[in-house]
Amino acid sequence: MKSKIFLQLITALFVFWGFFNPAAAAPVHENEAVRWANATGYALIEALGNPDLEQKYAVLDKMFQDDVDTVHVARFVIGRYWRAMTPEQQRAYLKLFQRYVLSLYKNYPLDFETDGIDFVITAARVNGDYTDIFCNVKLPENMASENLNSVTLEFKVTKTAGKIKIVDLKIGESSLLLTYRTRFYTMIKDVDEDMDWFLEDLETLTVSNEKNAEEKLLYR
Figure (cartoon, rainbow, N blue to C red):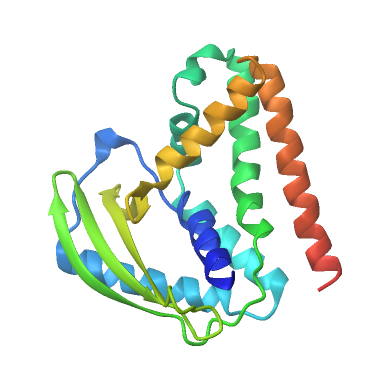
């Protein structure tokens, strides 16, 4: 169970970590990609290991805000429905989406020990406009099970405006970008493609996430 929660947390943290405008995409040299992945990975582990939940939220929020092009991400995950919204709905959605992003990871348990979590970059390869980074994450004993003691991740990164950003994360064969697009499409279809109702549902979900995070701070 703990290993499953860890995978869900990694999904939430990395799915929005850094997306970009594809027109500005450029591959990252393999050596630079490996250095960046090592530095970013250990920074994340350090942030997760901070026992002070308020400080942990602050650091992770800042990492999101510094590295995420939320406008592009928001438009990608909503896909063709972006054009179905009025300009007013689009503006409301973009503001709401940023709140949703920052509330998402806070729904997962963040009070676990990170001692024993380690990772190894096994390969980095340029692939067109992108660079694929392959990583094996070792789970600590308190998270590992007989059938799962490590996780293989694949990051797709690019460089835009001189900054390296993740554009996709795969756990096995599952692309998280497409997973979240599927989730949003389902929400929209559940309300018969009425974008006002979709925005209301997204607001309700976001507010619930934010309240849960506030309660964790109050009762930590």
